[in-house]
Image (cartoon, rainbow, N blue to C red; front, side, top):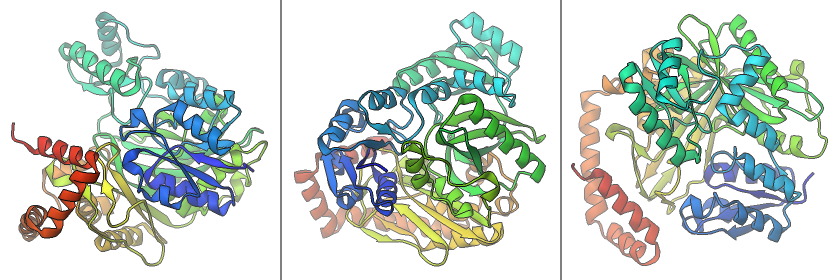
Length: 505
């Protein structure tokens, strides 16, 4: 086992890894930006190293600062969490060169499967199905048009080096291809420093189902079941569940077998996720591989009883084998995870930035909350809006949905808006409860105002007016404003950014 692990991340995932290290009796080191100097992961760690200003490009994305912190503290391993440097092959390679273990796959695997084009070629070689499309980078408007006609409209342009909906454009007409290509390439260059694009047939409103996999250096490979991830907004997941209500036993068997075959073809080691799209006819296609821990990993932990973070760490330690066989993995009950984001879902999901004035977390049997929240924490404009996750388990899917809805009803985060009220409404929707939803469900649900009664809208309007009055006129709010102006320049920046976003055009 490692002498010391440095956690190259922040927020709830940094707290999650810290707790796993504690259970493994391995000292852990936190890193933090100026914006996170009072963050929970910093307060819980035995050691913490400041790595720069609030902007990620000057702190959490600075490989030199992360490696310097590991060297200074004597850490012989780095856990990247998810996001930031978690799928950066260059970072993994520099860790290898420095004699520091990167807790994840090796740099070659990240490079191979992190490139969407290379991943497509690997998957085709494995025999698993892929969405029809190009297997080479697009270089010219003429080549783009030819490939699109070959695949058939609608098509989707995708960034080869990234994900999360960035560098992605859906095109329904040939005359829109060139402009969409330029916009997608520009966005990909900004987000991933790589403007390489490829093209696929666009599957309209498919199901998004992913398979959790794990592999050791001795050739052992297992899957840990699937997760349904179709409840999305702008290609970002907001609720996940396992098992998927969309899969028959036969389809589940074929999909998990395909995931294992892909892992073997890629020569992949450690924990990862194979993502698939399932069309309305029940056919499935490879989408991408995530060479890291997923935000929704607790869902799998709840139905298998396997701690994926501790498994990651053990598999990264020299020569460790998978501690179980495929036959030994038992799947029990149903689990769901609701992502709590500091956003206003009734106002275009605009970021909600401010100080957490009050906090009440849900509890009860089989209810888990992963977060780095506490009363007094400032939600910063510099990072992802995800501030926590509520995960529940129950014997059946219906009972699980009821339990999650109740848990979200108990959750209270004062000072910022969150996505929790929207998810409560979704969990009460008859179509969702029947499992009849896909990636197009949420936009339609919101556009129809589904699940919101006139009384609820009226109550929400009153609550918004009271909140605005409190935020602008209460002595406590004025005191916080004055203190923030003196001590927290990034908070002032966040409020100004929020005001600019809300300003009428």
